[in-house]
Length: 518
Picture 1 (cartoon, helix red, strand yellow):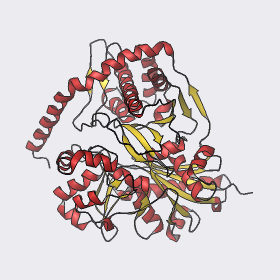
Picture 2 (tube, rainbow, N blue to C red):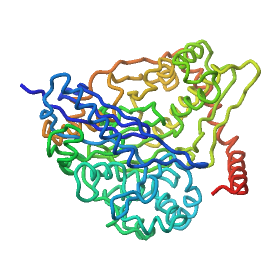
Picture 3 (tube, helix red, strand yellow):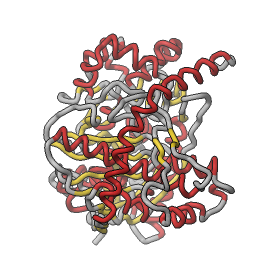
């Protein structure tokens, strides 16, 4: 009997992974391709959507080749769904070619538009409609920046699309279409109706015809073309089902479909979320549509996650990542340093802060430095900062919701760090479960494809069946009180430095403009 498979395609910020999954949620083959990113000027982060497509083809082709090598008939692949980077905006002309580089979720060029539009339209109205307080991350403000600064691009752009809509159109042809929960991070979706917000489109003077069609998770978006079948080796006319944002897919991939379990993705950003059946919005989180098509995700997001660790190693550690063992060496040294890093603390807002402060001018702070501190102290302090920020955000969320999260399930590359895992358990006082599958976003997309292919009656059933085993790490109660003391200090750090950071950001921008940069 042929073992039927589906593919979860994870088109994330730095790479694309195509993973074939069986009905039990076991990864059978994995293809991967890197995606370059440009930082052409201060606060600008861009990609060429053609690179998404070439990475998609390369990753899928690699996955198919592995399947064939392992003796699998490619006809056993019954469908594909996409998990994609969120809050990234792409500009497509009538000829199907990009009119401008894609603006990434990391980009901060639209700070002024956040201020002016939220004052004009109303910050509370934006939050009520979209589930997100005004912030540089959603695409809403990138629309405004382009309209105000690149009028020719705005006029030439026939379609403004998310990553998934772009890839689906390339795979299947036809018009642009995407899943609900790939569109909602763009920040112009009415969260309660799951439709483009007519109020926001009117304020943007943006026609709905220039946006993708919206579809529920797991619905059929199209079938791959003959040309793509030849390029990748996938079966002709294979179905492509509506997936969505990588954060929500990660929640699905870890079966976070009840309010007792929260996921925490220790990746480029640190992202955690918990499911809710009701729509609520609050400054303690951002609200998103859930990947299973029922309910919502309340999500915390620290933009500088493992990105910050990589930055520190690249910029300040001798030999950097040229030393293949650099992270292991830092981990082992940091394990020997006591809680609190011998009086050193970091504020990890190197790319601004979302919840709970929603301050685009927040910046990183290292406080308490002395001549006794080493690179290992700073490394540990960064880990402690990301941990304390997560614990603070989760506790604020629990207070607002009126119930406690029972445990976390950790995913992403950071989940491989024994030090970081135990830190999270000890500081939160909650067990940390680590999934055997760290590629939870690709698995979540695979679960959606499994539902689309008819393997399961609901996406939730697919998640419960395919999520796989976990390993539990219990908190050390003897460390909990010490972390409580440290958390109390951390809670004061933002208010103590916010005004200084705002003044420094303004000062740097004036200097940048005075030097003739555009």
